[in-house]
Image (cartoon, rainbow, N blue to C red):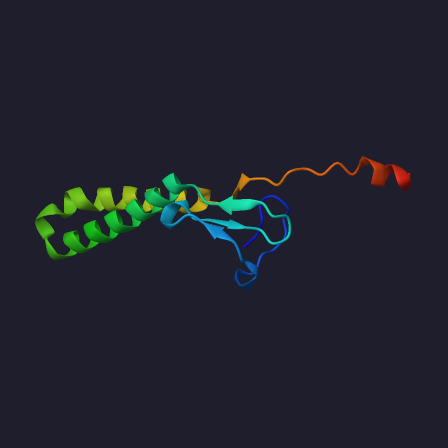
Length: 109
């Protein structure tokens, strides 16, 4: 996983703090202590697109009388799945507080 705040890679074994459950789960970056999460709306749309395409694909396979209607529904649900999957990125929920280190910087100028 890549932190959206400090752009460093995070291993799953390094994650020690987590809050929330399900679609609202958030993890804390061990490098910059920013809270990271995903958009719950996009996650729900991705899940809806997957199950809708699976259901319509299976139902239209076994019932030929509704194929002309369910195949376009399946295509649009697959498009919803792919678009929501590509848009679903790890975002910074809560950034850490900035530390004033101007004295330290001034020392080396």
